[in-house]
Length: 97
Image (cartoon, rainbow, N blue to C red; front, top):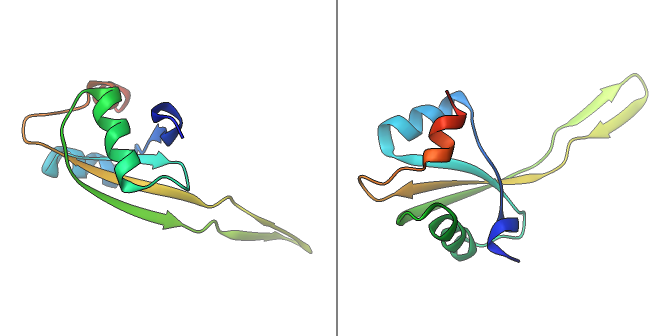
């Protein structure tokens, strides 16, 4: 897995924006088989920052019914990356405004 396929997109929810402002913690949707080490190297090389901590969450997709038909949303993995004090990711800062 390359560094550019590890990170899929930034997580821009209300809760993740509060975490970014208060704790310098950024959220990303990552590849389902990505490890914490791969996520750390990807964030450090792409955004040129120092990562201090990573928390990952595997989210199971919800099942939905429409009459007798049943469907399922895809499973995905989230990663919350805490950066060193003073570092920030400019691309995510600009996308949330």
